[in-house]
Amino acid sequence: VVGFPLGLLSGYVGGKIDRVLVLVMDSIYAFPGLLLAALIAVVIGKGIFNIGIAITVIYIPLYFRVTRNQTLSTREELYVEAARALGARPRTIMLSYIAFNVVIVIPAIFSLSAADTILTAAGLSYLGFGLEIDVPGDWGRDLSDAQRFLGAGIWWTSLFPGLMIILLTVGLSFLGEGLNDIVNPLLRKERA
Image (cartoon, rainbow, N blue to C red; front, top):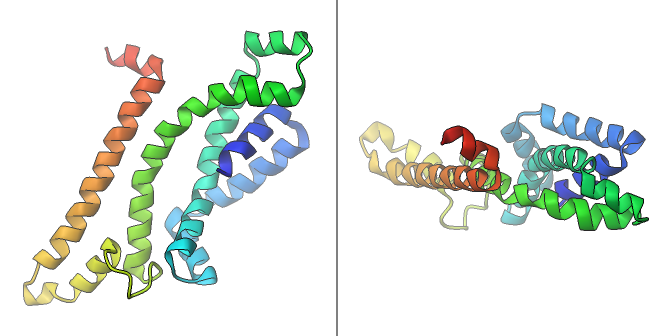
């Protein structure tokens, strides 16, 4: 929602706007994701909405970079040059010709980053920066709570939350790889 339009604008307009946005995104991207999300969670507090904000902030540079790179390559295509030659306005070119050809890679990136989002949210909850105590079903907090029972030999309380995190993460990664194969025909040719 944030990274896509910023990447589209940066890649199409270029110049000082591009340099400033790339600098800001590289600055955000330089921090480890879990550390930055934990810092944001400490500043804005616990809660599902606040964790959503923290996770969104750490993924803006990923979507920005992918969109910007696709926009840089798409804006040099022949059909974009033809639209410019026919007198199309820059906004029309950006939204009608470039955005629809760039947005096709976003679902594959989304499903791949969703797996990492699950791990980040579970990590925040495990560290105590996640959801409030009264919210049930937080696998990261369940793992943290189950850790104190491991010394007593009660291992199954940590098995199931950990197993569910692993299964969901692997499933989303496979979905992302499958979508990437569908979206990127060059990968299909290389694997065949």
